[in-house]
Image 1 (cartoon, rainbow, N blue to C red):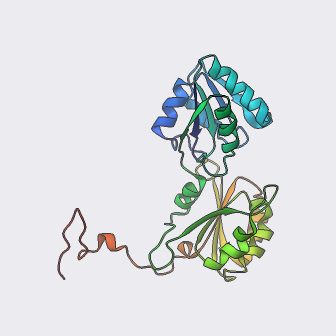
Image 2: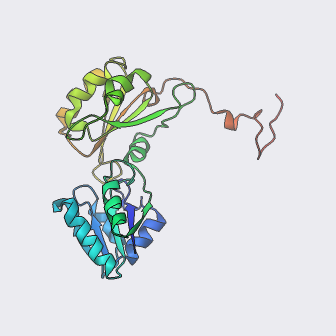
Image 3: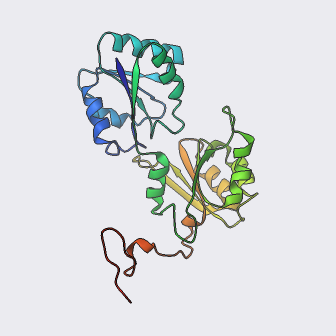
Length: 253
C-alpha cells in the first residue's frame, strides 16, 4: 500500500512536475489543501477522481480517509502546495501512515520561494554578494528555535526567503533591522505565479507601510537581501573564457 505526497507547485497549473501531473491523472482519491492549493491545479485530476478539501479536516480525519481508500486498493494522492518538504506538515502524516503499514512517496514540487525569485527576476545566489539562501519563518502559533530567530539569522545578511510571516510584517521588519541596514532591499510577492500575483518592493524601513497599504496579510513570500538591489556582483567563473572544466577547455587571454 502506498500514498503519494505530491507537490502542487506555487500556484500556476503548469508549474507542477510531469510526475505529479501523471499521479493526479491516475488518482482515485485526491486529498488537497484547499486553503492553499490553487484549484486550477486540479485540472490535472482524472474525471473519476474523488476530490476532498482537507482544510476542514484534522489529522485523524485525514488519516482515516486516506487509509480507508488505500486499504481498498485505490490510488491516493495527498496534494500539498509548493514543495511538500517545506512547511508541509507532512511528517506527522507519513509517520502515522507508516505505523499502519502504508508506505509514502514524496514527489517534490516547485516551492513558492523559487516562484517569488522568478517573479522579481533575480538570482538568489550572486557571486560577490551572497552564496547562501536562508529559508525561514517568524515564530507564530508554530514556535521557532531561539537560535534560528530572524534577529540572529539577519546578522548573516544573506538572501532570505521568509514564509508564513507577512501578516506579522511589522515584527519581521523589527527583527531584520538587527542585521540588515534600513535601506536593505525587500520584495513581498503575494500569490507568486497565480494570475493575481502582486509584487511590492521597497526598503526595509518602508516595506511594512507598503504591505499594509496593499492589504497583503497572507499567502505571500518576503524576500530580503542584496540580490534584489542590483548591486554589483562578480560574474560566474563557470562561463569565463579562461575557465576550464570537464566539458570545455579554457582559452588563454
